[in-house]
Image 1 (cartoon, one colour):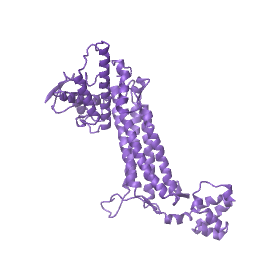
Image 2 (cartoon, helix red, strand yellow):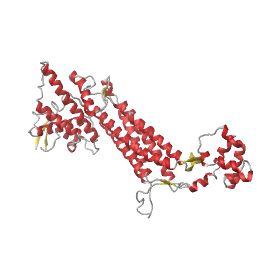
Image 3 (cartoon, rainbow, N blue to C red):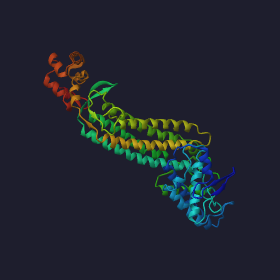
Image 4 (cartoon, rainbow, N blue to C red):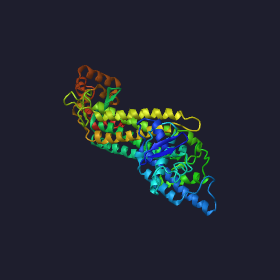
Length: 479
């Protein structure tokens, strides 16, 4: 065991733990099980590495010019600096995450997050150069691991990096779902279906139109997701505690963003007004709204296909793949678990959107203390939607079939079919034909044979699948 001390008191910590007293206090204060996203943890490692790389250039430049370090600070040795950089690299790869003990829901604007990573890096570096954990007079979590950094620019910058990475992953998942949807669109492009408006029978359509419309919605989602990079590429790194850069060498303010771009490969840009970027989170609110739009489309698709494949739908033309048994008491019952899963995901994203908006508004003066909860909710939405898109594709669209034989027959018994005849026979005659269909419960062909409103061969041509699915009409066709 080792004893660590802060201004509040002392704590006993097992020697094999890389976390320290600050992390342990946070764990005790925020005793909950909300998981901190490992992707955010990795991004913090990249930000730390950018600082250590910049420090090396800073030290070399100062020494070349014969400049002394700031008073109260001695130049770190190359051995210490190499150890810090190597440890930060390990964090950026997700190593030592089992020593990250701070939950996602916490107070303190992310200071506990920053200190937990600082302690991991410091203690891992101590072990790397032959010392014991907790021997902070050699490598200190604050004086060395946190050199010229602030929680208030390190943690939000790392969050932006993690979110941009997750946007890239999600865009691929959307494209995977689109691929399955395009297959259905092509396979059932001319397959007739009964369209419904306000849950009432409307004019005929095709399953090609249905799946094509869903595909268009997902295409818009993909385009919007790619815009998240543009929304979040602006970072506040170098702003320090309140965006003013106080206590930070100007060399770091200019060079850390350069180092971070090199490490991440992302086109990150520094906010012109770092104070604005530190205190306001409307960029996160805007970016998460893009995820909410995707959730809306996923729920619409899942809800529609669940309805079309349900026992309530009279035609039951859509057959959803059966994935698992649906009842512990009713033999043979199979439920639409994948649509229900997707709908549940969507509503969790809506809840996260409300949380992100309301906590962003809770930002007070120069900082938002609720960034940890905001960031964790955002990351969760990414993970949920990624799962939703993948499962929409491989568990629902793949294996979905359409058998619209009975539905085709019903289409011609629906009085709304007379809508297509209005340009040929006028509204009044079309209404007479529709009324007769209602009264006789017969098809449009049978009613026309009784009323003799239009030549049967002309009616068959007008109501052919190719004619019904053609966009609009031309006067030439009418002639």
